[in-house]
Image (tube, rainbow, N blue to C red; front, top):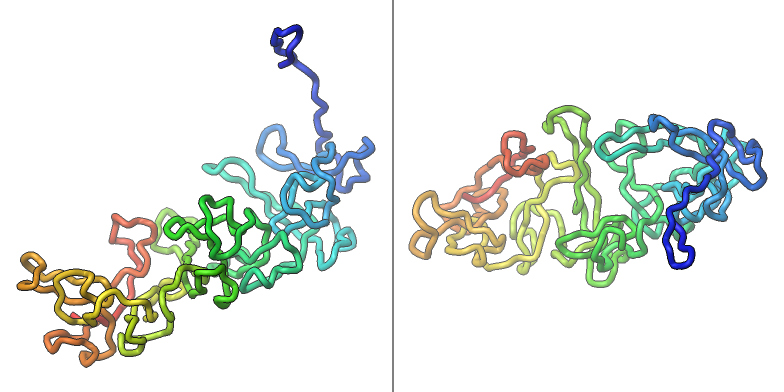
Amino acid sequence: EVTVSGIKLAVKSCKVQPIAGSCVYDKDCPNAGDVCTLALSQDGNSLESVCDKPVGTIDGGSSCAVDADCKSGICLNSGVCFKYCATGSDCTGTNQLCEELNFTFGTAEAPKEQKIKGCNTKSVFCKADGDCSANPNLSCQPSVANAGDNFLTPQCLLNVGTKGAGESCTTDNDCKSGFCLTSAKICYGICNTTTDCASGTKCYANMITFTFDQNTAVTTDDKYDSTSACVPDRGSWSLCTRDSDCTSTEWCSPQPTKDSTKWEGRCQKRTGTVGAGGDCASDAECRSNFCIPPSSGTLSDFNPGICFGMCSTSNDCVSIFSTCTSVDLTTHDRGTPDDDSDDLTAALKVCL
């Protein structure tokens, strides 16, 4: 649309189309200055090599922060601009190799994948952002090292935003990890110790759990793995089996293990003063902030409940009327909170 003498006119123009299927290297392109990159085929079913005008100014194989930096218009998750390769000798960047890269295209409802050879930086495994300091465009993010793995191998990958682990955020795009924790409004980020976290947060194990879908119609075969994260102070997080293993200001809180298949106790800041198995008339009275209601009638001082809490033996229960009992409790609801039939459960010893 153009404006002539104050009148807007719709104008059709010709656009030079990329030359499809014509290159492996930039030198294969017939027009000077063009680069060999990727584009969606006309039928939309695959990616193909094309010669096209450069998008950015950075050569293939060099460091980048966003797609627009690169001549190819593609900044890989490893923080380098896409560049085709046939052998390792085509990749001249530091610590690079020629490997099959997995590209996803299509729609969210019907994604497609295609492997294409390109130069990539060798994987840098990490425990915190500091392990990725050689490239400021990268941060430590959850990743899967090999196809078929049902566990995470964190790697240094391209930043989404600019804020690190534990820093305040309002949207996912604020964070290097691309994930703003909605409850605390802080950026998710993997950590090794609290020194890796922003001020006001601490590093805790097994904070964020990821699901490994087994590509079946059911959820009962899904697998899980967790990473550490920087979150507001929850307590010492020391391993425990009963309240007496923790400080006087904490209680032994049951937490799912890294793969959500078992329970483990972690010392966490307490709420009330009544320990496991003690009488209670409200949640706030209990160290655990959970008063199990009586089997019948309304919870009150005259019809008390029992403070929830872990135990090793009945001696850990504060009331002589409570016994240490093993019960199966849900470690993961498998993403179906209204359907208990598929829950992943594990035995936990509590005072009842």
